[in-house]
Image 1: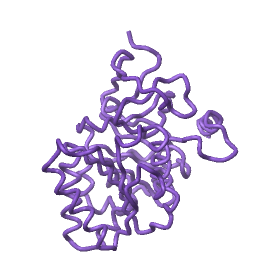
Image 2 (image 1 turned 30 degrees about the vertical axis):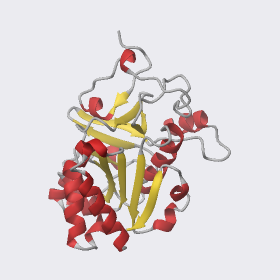
Image 3 (image 1 turned 120 degrees about the horizontal axis):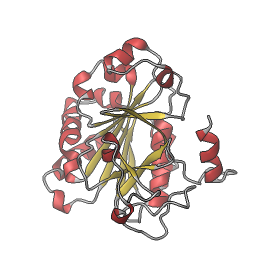
Image 4 (image 1 turned 180 degrees about the vertical axis):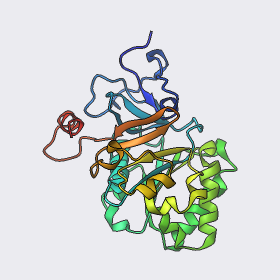
Length: 273
């Protein structure tokens, strides 16, 4: 019997399978913000969002099958906010010292608050040599999976890597392909127009998440149906996870760090938008 408190897993969502409650590990004091009725997140997992059926969308960091993750959409659809929300949710949900995050962006000042979170190793400017060193060091870690702490490599803007030396692109491509098997998880944002013109890179991502895309040509390039639900997504609102049977509609994680709003109220209000 499947309990009503199920987890919608990134991998299992692709096959429309839910885990049974007996398979869900319990971790005290790490319950999902705004969803007090749900069990705690499994260890070494990442909350990606809340599906429209009300179930959490969870990425298990020791199961490499979902592959690297792409978050794409048109400018203003909420990709950067998605990264911020993910980091704050992880800070509140993941046991200290079990998962670490590294962030590469063209605009590190936009993440000054997130840089101070204990789970964040640092925020690197894409054009700096330190970012190149980070990608190189992470690529070396692929060969030592048993020694690795689960590490999430966040890149806010795939195009930022393309404006740097070719070695950075090579190291990133290596991490996209092999990283999840070594507990290194690239989660990369990209403007839809950019990723549509780089199909080889688009295919590196085993899991593809889409925000609002109004341009029919771009949608066609990404093999997306151009319908009302995809074109009318609002900023920082819905995203869609591509799966074999269609799309899973979900919202980014909303931890209770926003002043003046109770998390359950935020979830209720956003689910109606």
